Length: 216
Image (cartoon, rainbow, N blue to C red; front, side):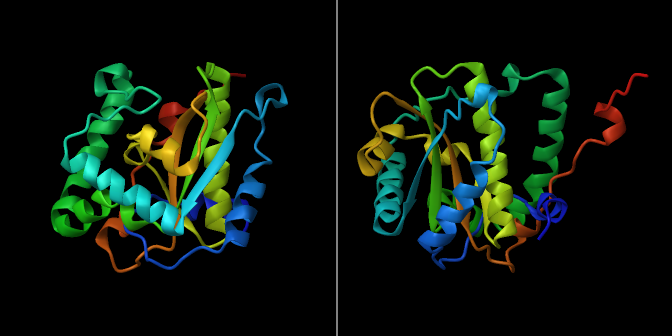
């Protein structure tokens, strides 16, 4: 698969098959992502991948914490609609409007999947140093996109989600992440269930003419 095919084929997968991803494939995906351009070649990222029994334990503890009403406390503050620009708010509002009917069409799968970390067979946790600066966060965003594209090229789909990082203390305990690290992002990885409506949804994109400004 070439890079343009991967860009067009990558999409948010919200219901994964339970088929495991072998360690060799996971390592290759991260190795591909290492080609991401980085500010001053700082390469500020680390990757912790949970799979097998480790991930089962995380899923179990997340479910128990949610049921007990434990307050979410992601290392990077959760952004709310009011924190975004008018244009971004409009885009999010449009997305909610188009995605809500998909949820309603398959609510059982949606809520079961979300409450069980999308039943992904592997989750890559992207980690930065303590109090990361804006350039390191930018680099991590670029790294996450490259990782997702590399996964797609190797037949693995993905989903970046706040749900995956909302209980960082659990992740530190289960993955031995040092306390002086910021668990910034989680990316669920796996093989999607093709018959699920959730996985057939594709988000609209703003027309290029609305965001592109070429000056001669």
